[in-house]
Image 1: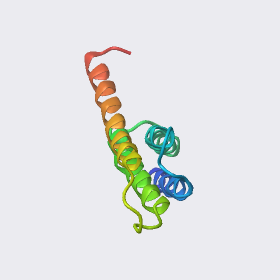
Image 2: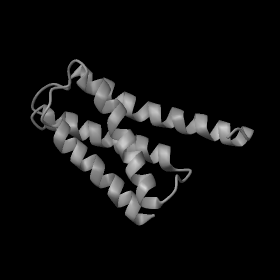
Image 3: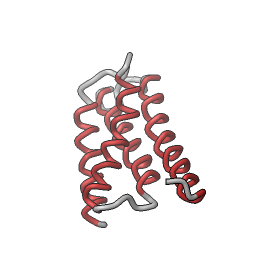
Amino acid sequence: MALAIVAAAAVAFVAAVILGEYAFVGVTPWAAGLVVPLAVAETCALAAGRRPAWLWPFAAVTGSGGVAWGVWLSMGRGLDPWPSGGSIAVALALVWPVAVGAALRRRHTAGVS
């Protein structure tokens, strides 16, 4: 489990460094908000060998943290104003994994495969 957490954190770190090179305008915030938590979740699941119950909330927190760090880096480490696209990306990265996790939990609890 520790390997899964470290691997997922490494993915979030790399994503932040890469996102730091881009302006958060147009499609970039939407793509970052969707892709980074997904990459974190899949890396975590691959390293853990299964999909633990805490996967999606962990992906939301870690992924949105990576996106927020990337926004901070892209704006010159806080010297420029926070872009509205950055807020969209962070919010999206925080909300959608939790919604997916809740939907999967309801589906599993209902006995639907």
